[in-house]
Length: 115
Length: 109
Image 1: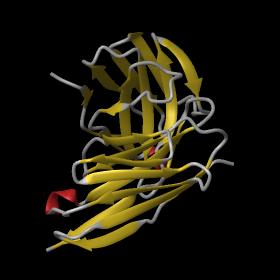
Image 2: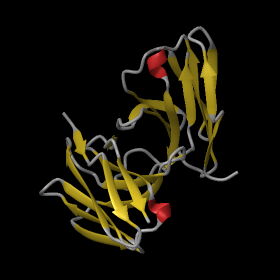
Image 3: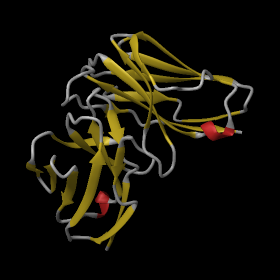
Image 4: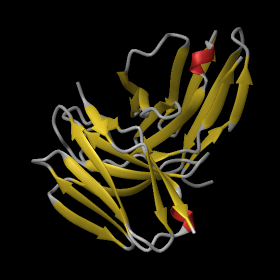
């Protein structure tokens, strides 16, 4: 595997379900990100981890819970979601937070549908 | 507030040239990125500008004017595979990326 991988690619869940999204980066980076992408809207940054510590949490509802067990893996735990949470969830990684040229590399995303 | 503006959709002809504009108003500036995103795929990095001027990379070039809060992505010799969304993003003073909503580029034969 190369780059950034995400599983599952598609997920359909009911509002009472609990599920988790997984992201893995094979680039040796120190920072990882979760974004939400809705149609015709800008990418919304949800969480940022640097060396497994959360450095950013942009007012995300508590029904989204991130976990970063090591610098290569990132999870997004989902519970009691709402239909408006249906979107493409993108994971990204970068070398390190806090430098201007720090380029983020994205995974293919998980297309989430909440019924 | 912080804002990135880019056209929602553009159409161009195969073999032609197209320019996608991006204007921004952000708290601080630490560089501007362009990404390409094909439908159902990951955004992929195209270019990074932090100084004024034109950066050329093959068929793609990116221009920046910091005083005007303006950038453009220039695509030459358009190919059908260039049909995609093009995302403009600015890194602000907190080193956070502020994203535009993307420009969907449709290439016609």
